[in-house]
Image 1 (spheres, rainbow, N blue to C red):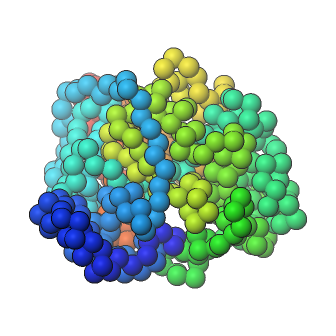
Image 2 (cartoon, rainbow, N blue to C red):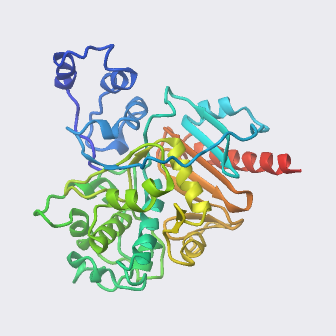
Image 3 (cartoon, rainbow, N blue to C red):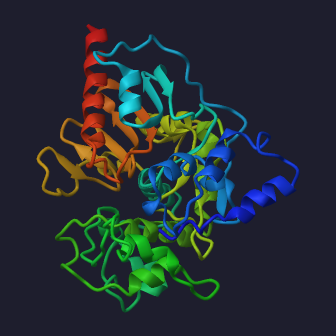
Length: 399
C-alpha cells in the first residue's frame, strides 16, 4: 500500500543522538529498529518486521503520518464477567495463531482477555481492513445527519473526480457491497496489483489521490452484478463521507462514536499521500476499544443515549446483500456475514471483530499471521474453529 519507506541506520543514529539511548527507547522501538522495514509496502514485510511494525505504524510520522481519533473523558465500562472455560488451550491457540491480543465480551462483560507477542493491553495495533466496517458505519451516520441523502445516490454527486469514469453510474449502495463492476486487483502477493499501488499516486492539492486512481480503472462487469473485493472502493467510501460531511474521517469517527460511546484511548488513522485517511485500512486502537466498537454495534449504534445510525441501517448493513460463492456466507455493507446471524469486520494478517447477536457476543483480536489471508499455515481456519469453540462454551455455560 505504499505506506512505508525504508528505515536506515540514520534513524538509529538519530535516536542515540537525541540522548534517549538503546535501553531507554523501550522494547517496541528496540524491536522495530532491530527489524527495520526495507520495502515500500507493509504487504511485503517479513514476519519479524510485521511483529515489530504492526504496533508501531502511528509512531513513525517521518515515514507515514496519521490523524488522531480522540476519545472522550467518560469510558464505557467493560466489567469482568465469569471466566469463560473453553474446550481448548487458549495459550496454545494464541501462540500457534500468532495472536497478539484477544478480548471476548459477552453480555457486556469481559469473559476472557489474553495478550501475546509481547503486546500489552494499552498498546495500539493496526486494524487493516477491520477499518472497512468502521468506515461503512460512518456512511450510516452521515445519512442520519442528512449529509448523504440516500445510498441510491450516484457517487458522482459527491466525488467529482469520478465523472466520466467507469464509476459514472455507480451508486453508494453498490460501493458499500463491492458490486460496482469496476476492475480491481486485490492480490496481496503481487507488487503490481491495484492494492499495492493505489497509495503511490501524486495529485494536486485539494484533489483525492484515491479518487484519481480509481477513475483511471476500466469496467469489468455491469454495475450491481458481480461482487469483487476492493480496498480501493472502501477508500472511495471514505472520500464520500469526508466530502459529504466536510470533516476528516478521524474527526467524524471521534464525534459520532469514539467520544460519545466511551472508548478508553485515542485511536489513530493512517493518512495517504494526499493527507486523507486511508479508509479501507489502518486504524490503530487497543484490542479493548475494538471490542467496544463491536459492543457499540450490538447496542444498536446508540452512543450516549443518541442513535448514531438511521432506523434499519444495522439490519441492512449486517445482512447478506451479495454472495461470493461460499455456502453459508456473504457480504453486507463492508461486513462479512454468516447465515447463523453472526458477522465480522475482518482484516488481513488476522485482525477481526466477530459479533454474534444471538449470544450477545463480541470477539476482538489482533494478530500477525504468517500470510495475509492466513491460508499458508491454517490460521484462518483455526480462527473460525476458535469462534465455534467460544460459542460452544457460552452455550454450555448458559445451561
